[in-house]
Amino acid sequence: MIGEVGEEYAIVSAYREFEKQGFGVKRGEKIYLHPVEALYLQLNGKAKFAELEKLLSWVKSKVPNFPEVYLVYTDLRAKGYKVKPQEEFLVAKKKFYPISEKNRIDFENLLKMIEKEKSFIVAIVDEESEVTYYEVSEAEIRGEQMENLPKIVGKILTDRVVVENTELFERYFYGNLLGNSVVLSIFESLYLHEIGSLEIELDELKSVAEKIADFQEKYEVYRDLKRRGFVVKTGFKFGCDFRVYRKVQHIEDLPHSDFLILIAKKVLEPQELARAVRVANAVRKKLLVALKGRYILFDRVKV
Image (cartoon, rainbow, N blue to C red; front, top):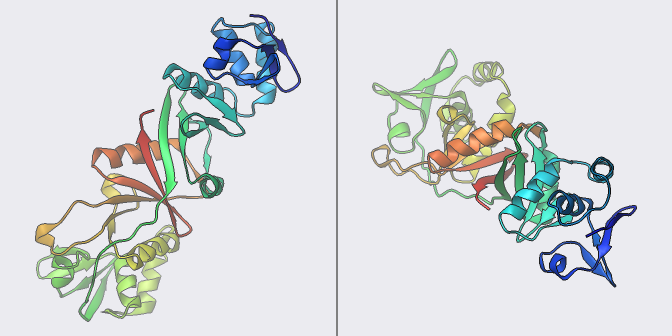
């Protein structure tokens, strides 16, 4: 079938098969096609709109994030979806947001999109043109930990704090057991001091904290998670900032942690996101990306 390239759309005579397959918008006896749809039809031998070089040039001028939009479009079509390009999304049963693995994710912009759309799927195209899909949505998270903490005295040991109270570890899972003492992280120590449980030399503690990279940013997330009722531990061995438990009753009956927490900068590298989600899925946890007191759930999905 022969069509033509217009200013914003490609145009072809109305054709029932195109309508059934969800291509374009019918107006009278014509079907108006998005540039991505026109390219797909021509490359699959179903229509011709112009010489390929001219058509590609036109599509690239109209689609800002070409070719990843086209690659995600073709992948969804191959999976049987009827797909419609719509602003920055590709719309099928859900909305898909295509990006390249080479482009950083503007996380503040992503938050605005989530506020508007509630949930959608980020489709990341790698250098070999394969697509990986991650469903994103904002998570309202609450823990169930109740704490009636003892009064304790701490001694600073270089970059951590030692207290002589094993209940803090055995019942509430703070720190790590060392003989008859518990060794606390600086995050735990500052929080315990703030809530009035830990007696310690505050100026010295703050001096140690200042030497930790991005301490204030990380501590604000730690404190927020504690206020939400979680048990919070380091996520180092999972490649994240924290791991969290909804509830711990005793160290001898320690459950699996529920979430891994990755603290986002203004931009997020797709490779960093992919690694974190893969690790979370491998250990049966969910990945939450934290930014400004909000938590975004990233979950790899098959489409």
